Image 1 (cartoon, one colour):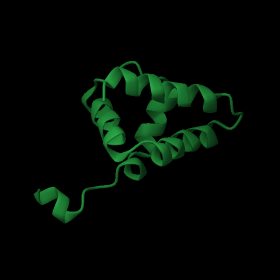
Image 2 (cartoon, helix red, strand yellow):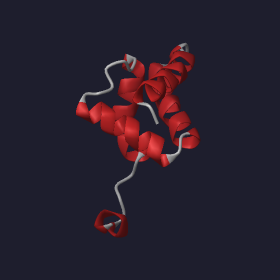
Image 3 (cartoon, rainbow, N blue to C red):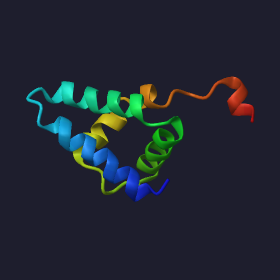
Image 4 (cartoon, helix red, strand yellow):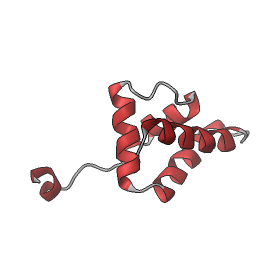
Length: 84
């Protein structure tokens, strides 16, 4: 999927949850929403782009959510997947 589309989608989610008064809860809810509603390939792609520095358009709250909850958004590959 186009990285700009993923960034736009993630920022829309972030905009919604950023209005919450509890920032920590908002960050957790952003990550939870992405985990629940994005397929693993979409999550992997945005996380890889973030790690590589190619997700410059991400809002700060989304960047924090993706970084803080990375292991829950895209758990490590199983041994079988890593060999493939």
